[in-house]
Each structure stands twice: as structure tokens, then as C-alpha cells.
Length: 188
Image (cartoon, rainbow, N blue to C red; front, side, top):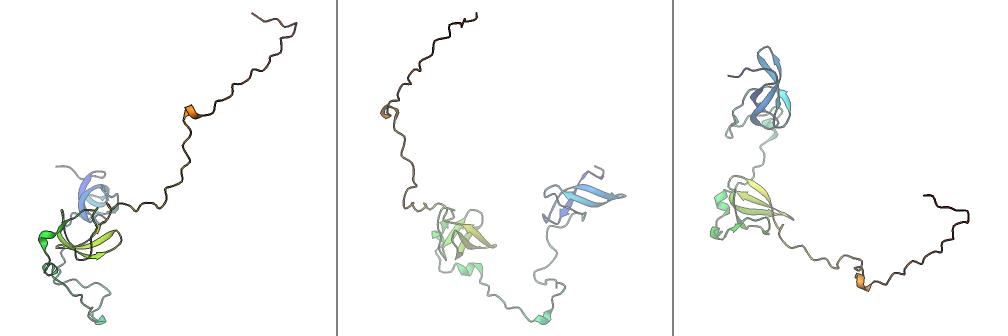
């Protein structure tokens, strides 16, 4: 069993990563760990121990937040359409395999390798919103479409003439050298 000490490692809940991860112990008060640093994101925070991965809040009975009151009136409810109902009247055998290169239209049924069957609910320029069984995702599309050709090719200077067609260079003429002075004697 390893001993807990400053500089040692301990598993703790990281509030930034929102996961139970390995942390380095920064500070202790007696035998109690009080401050840790996440080895993944580098965030320093109080030691909270390990947290359960499932949040204790129930969706059936949500907690009231401080500052919210029920006197504000009921919130308008959004119509919820069951995932299966979205596919009524659609031929699921004709679902297209998802590819970043393909372009999709509204109400297209796609088959994603990770998320499964989905229905395109909105189309933006290069992205589509797709409703899958678990959640809505924004996916990229139309990346493989060939780019529109340029109206005019970019200006390029003409290629240089091949060497055999270049004008011949004039040979440099020799400059006359004055004879050495009469009293000049070369040294050896």
C-alpha cells in the first residue's frame, strides 16, 4: 500500500474535466489531503475525493436552484416528438452512409458509423444538424465536393526561353595590360 504524501499521486474528482482522474498532491494538513493538481488539465483545486460518475439529481424531480421561483409562471413547453415518430414514412433501408464528402438535405436519413440512424433536421452552409436516438449532433458535410473552377487562371510570367534559344552572350574583350615599368623586377 502506498503512503499518501505531498508530491504523490491520488485519484480525485477534477471539477474542470468533470471526471475522476489522477492528481498530484500539492498540500496536506496533517494526514488530510487539502489541495491537488490534475495531471490531465493542470488545474489546481481542493481535494474532494472521488465522486460517483452518475449525478445524483433525478430528471423526474429536478432540484430547485437558488434564485429561481415558481411564481414566474410555467415555462412554455416544447413539443417533443418521439425519435421513432420522426422516421414514420421514411424508407430506412435507403439510409445513406454518412460521409463528410457527401451533401445532405433536410429530412435525409443517414446511417452514421458511431451514432446510428439519424434524420437531418437543419442544413447550414457546410454543416447539418442530425437527430440521433441519443442526442442531436452537428456534422460537417459537403467537404468532398469539387471546388468551383477559377474564372481565369492566375497570372504567371511566361516561362524562360530554353538555353538553346537564348541569344548568345558576347565574349568579354580583353583589356590591354600596360607593360611593367622598366625598373620593375619580379621577386622570386
